[in-house]
Image (cartoon, rainbow, N blue to C red; front, side, top):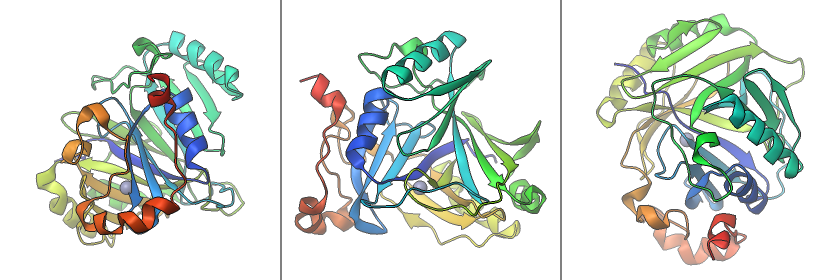
Length: 305
Ligand code: ZN
């Protein structure tokens, strides 16, 4: 029993429109679900992913208008690492980011940059057997497109304190980090030395990272987390997947989420993300919440007319 790599990564944005412009417009991801934060249904929860909305490529944001800028510190994920196919892809992205007022730093097979709110990304040329998870974008050829998550890097003051839990969760120790590799996909969890300043959970910071489980194994993972010393929540039905949550000893919030039922459970794959989707338990709030959400224009839909 192994976790199937990273399921999704959730961060915070202050401005949904700027966020959509960057991730669906510049980065070429597909906005696959526009819904509300189920723990606070007055704010957006936006999901960007590949064309099919697959776990493994799914970057999500809570919109908190007016949120102060965040800053990663101990116990926080500070960098999201994406797979790309080639060094030519890094050339493409360095140029495309520059044309969109985003500076990047190239170091061999890696390109590092931040989104407009300071959330750090790395594009890394890797060779893995996993299926590339790619979105269609008229300006981003498939051979240079983002292919899904490779890793998250987190700041920990004491990586040794997390060993017991990560081992209980069947992560394998690798050169410089940990890997969760299942039958379909793998993903890495890497610690870096924490900066002295305290982290701030604000705009442009990562809220949590979710690891993928088969639907059948979620409660087994919950038991493994308990055996590793964590205090997981009960299983929570998020409608698009089921989840448990717990903090790992560094302070990073972990989620384990099921592969499925997925984003096509309430809208067809052709029109994913175009309207505000409210899970059945939240549908009665539509008249209340929809007028308070600042409308967002998806640049991809606009480009297609
Ligand atoms: Zn989550």
